[in-house]
Structure formats: structure tokens, C-alpha cells
Length: 637
Image (cartoon, rainbow, N blue to C red; front, side, top):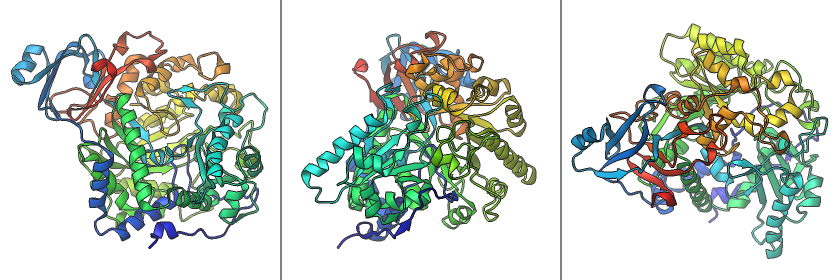
């Protein structure tokens, strides 16, 4: 008998060519929701009497166990403990037993603490605390890794002048041809992800390239359904056959927001995966690959910025199961996504609170709100109109200055009330805000909540915080709010923003990291993966050098006054990142009693060239999490 997932049908859906969408469920940057995912988790719960036991078995099959030594001492290298966030603090040796650091000090002290420990000669290499990725999207990134990769990256670098619409079309066409040659008996779709038109042609006064159904018909296929997700998560592109298969009418194939592309994406996923078993098998495989990639880049903890996009507690239970197996190489936690006030009651009824998942391996203490759109998607909410607007994104919708996701026209979804209620429930908040007007209104919400609720310790954050000037930074200091910067905005998109999106004055306040420190803010750097590649060393490089990496930019610096030092960058991806993620008692520094999370590097980043250029290429030799070696390069063998 076919499963509920396999039987799922898509209702007829009408999309007008230039419909002014209402932004009911907003997906910005990597905060992508998959409409079918909720169906998948519901179906799994209905079809299996003990879904968590089934998940454990599938995880064990997909991810091999990791060897755990009893005791270990590392010595004869540079061991930077990052105690108190100070990159200059070092010890001669560090000892850990099972998953916990027993001592950090002299070699003699470590031998006394663990007399029978296995000793490891570092031979001059450098040890740091395990690196922390404080904002990514694991489930959506894992789901899409089985699709055609249309991102502008090769590893952690931009592809360069070869990245064009033609480049993306060819990759999709090659995949479509395989299905065409086979006759496509299962009716498969060709799915692509992370296409970024903002990096196709960034010369001033040229139109944005958003491919229509006619473009996809002509350049990819007319006989296979085609769907591409934009890197921002706001937009999808479908060919004529994909629209026909979903009964979407009156559309040019450029689909904005979930109410437009949701039905098409749902049908595409049903056909792509076919069954629940295939879905979980594929996602676990790609997730394992992603987790291993994170380990290879020195990451020992990741913080998910959109848990609960399926609206199912089973999703959170799945991650608890995954992270508590001996196969998982990453410490994990995150924020539950609250799209609106209805979500507040939903998660309360589901029994999910800031204390429901609170272990060293899986910690969910935060709530996520998405207040506006993305800069490169031209929907970040600003005080001034975008000078080079897009016909579909801005002009036809009337959102010339971007999108605020909580308009006054919808009184049942009040931003300040949602923030106050989440704060009252004890959640730490992560609020996505890119534009300067969005940041201002988010701070209004925080101030209102702090004034009305009883005093308590808070770890409230603003995510991306792209257009923060000195006045906004000062106000964040007064309210105790910390920023987390998508620093790839500077390196990967700096040239685009400067030449295509904003004027020089606006671009000058992009990712104002030095301004943040000057106002005593604890900042972090993040990838927002899948939006940009995983890589904390790369993020430090981009924060220190602030080079515009686009090939036409000739590596020029974007506002040198905002450059960090390497020591400040290290603090941002270790000590302060652990603090932002409520994990400072577990990781972030190498101290007695904390978990044995560490990375061994071939060289010392503190002795790197001062401008940080090339730091992303510093070799990760080994990564350890909970006293287990989760990654070893050829150099370590």
C-alpha cells in the first residue's frame, strides 16, 4: 500500500504573474521551510509505532560509530586555551579523560592528573577550542544536498567570472538529459538549489536576472519538470511542465514566497523522494556528509537557526536521538522558529519550552523570529528604497524598501506582542534583521519586552545585523543585545552590494564589526549555511581582511575601519559563540571541567599575516569533540 507521503496530492493553485504577495510565511537567507517536511514527519509518526526507535536504527546504519579513547594528553605545541576569550593565553599541555578536560597546564601537571594517559606529541602544531558555528540550517541544507548544486562557490571560494545563468542552466540541463535518456519512468523532477542571480551580473544599471519559465524551457528542458531554489530562500523558478504538473496557472515561473512556490516545491519533493524510507535514507546520508565536512573545518558545535520548520516535535526528538549517538561528530543546538503568534500556542501545546531539550549534546534554549528579508534578495527592510530595484521582487509588489514581515495590516500577528510573550516564556531570542529599519524595530520590540517582563538573564541576539550604524550599536549595548554577522556579506557580496544594491554610504555600514566592539558588544560570525560555505577560519579571514572577493573587485577592502584582528576573530568563533549559544559551560575554551572539544591546526593563526588573507587555507589536522577524534587529515596519520 502506498504511504500517505506517496499519495500526497497538490491542490490546484493559482499564481498571478505579478501578484502582490502578502508574506504569510517568510523565508529569508537560509531560513527555508519545506512545505512537505511537515507531512513527512506526520506520516512517519502515523506509519511506525515507535518512530524514534526506527530513527535510531537508521542513524546507526548511516553513520558509523567513532572510537573513544580513555585518556589523552596533548603536548609540545601551541595550545591556545581562549580562557576569558583571550587568544594570547597558552598552556604547555592539556589532559582529558573520556569526554572531559581534566587539566590544562604544564606537562608534568597533566601527567600527574592522568598518569596512565595516552600521550600525543603535537610536533609544533596549534590547538584551539573547537570552533562554533552559531547560525546555520542543517535540515534544509541536508535535504538540498541531493539536488543539483547551483551555488556560486567552489569549496570556500567564489567560482568567479564563470558563474553565470548559462553555467547554472548547463548543470541543470545535464541532469535533465539523464532523465530524458532513461525515459524518466518514475516521473522524477530536476531540482536545483542555491542559485544566486545577485552574483551573475553586478554591473550597475543592469537588470537582475530572474529566469522565467520560458528561460528554463529554452535552456534546460521541456520534457522534465524543473524547479530551482534561489540562494536567498525567497524565490523559486519553475519551467512550464513543473507548473502544469502542479496545476499552477497564470505564472511566468518566477515564484515569490511560500504561498506561491509551496505547492510546486511540495509536488517536486514527493516525486523526488518517492517514499518516506527514501527521504530519510537520503537526508541521513547527506547530513552525515555535511557533518563530516563541518568536522574537517574544525567545527565541534553548530547552532541551528530554524529548528521546528516541520511544526513537529518529532523533528526535535530526531535531532536529540542523532546527537546522542556515538556516531554524531558535532555538538548541536538551536532555536525553534516562530513564524507568527499562532506558533507560540502550537509549541506550548506540544510541550516544547526552553528547558525541554537541555543536554550538553543537544541544547534548545532559543526562539527564532524572521523580521525582514535578505540584502542580496532586495527584501531587507530599510529606511530608503533600493536604488536599483527588481521588477518582480520590488516594483510589482510595492516593496521598494524591502519587506517587514509583521505589517500593521495583520493585527493578529503583532511583532512586539510575540517578542514579549516569548521573552516571558523564558526563551532567548534570535531575531533575523538585515535592514536598518528592521534592526530599529527589532530593538523597539526588545525594549518593550525587557521593560514589561521581570528581570532575568537574557542572551537575545540580532541575526545578520547587516546595516548597523554606531547609534544602533549603542542602543544594542544599552539593551544587552548581541549581534551575529553573516560575514560573507562582506567577502562574497561586498562588490555586489557596492555596485548593484546600495549607495556608498549604505555599504559603508555593512557588517560593522569594529563598531560593535567599540560599543562593547559580544559579536559572533556565522555562515548561515547553505547561504555561504561552512568555515570559521574563512569567516575570521573575511572579518579581518574585509576583501571584496568578486573577481572584478580586485580584492579591494570594504571599509577598513571595521576590520577585526585575528585574536578578535578567534574569540568570535569560540568563546563568544559558545556564550551566545548558552554553551559556555560546555565548550568555547579549554578549561578544567569543560568538554574535550578542540581542533589541531597545522600552524598558529596568531602568527598568520596580520590582514588574515588566506587563513581559510590553514590546514585542519584533527578535530575532537567530547574526547573523540571526529576528523583526521592525511597530515595526522
